[in-house]
Length: 146
Ligand SMILES: [Cu+2]
Image (cartoon, rainbow, N blue to C red):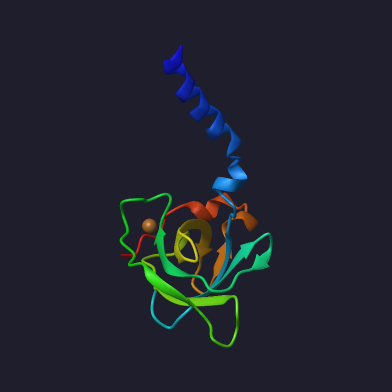
């Protein structure tokens, strides 16, 4: 009976830590990219939002993968940095490898370690948020151009 006492205390302790304490904040990203003159390269700006409020002071890296072709691409992650003249607005330039649907992965290291994913569809001029567009024909990889 005595041996059971300690583990039950541990269980009660774990239950008492509400998920909101373990994950005090969930950051969402809002990315907007424009094509540069270089093929498949984009200049992007991103907001990091918590409860719809833009957050300042973040830093980290962003990488990109294609959900439909996980092994096919090797996009080099780049650093995103906050614009000095526009607090809460971050920018970076990323070299993709084709048009279509990409999953951006923000690996935030400051102020806390956090990973934020955002699906974007790229055409020749810009990105569009994937959840705003429900045209599934866009998800096909017809013209592969490596
Ligand atoms: Cu691809």
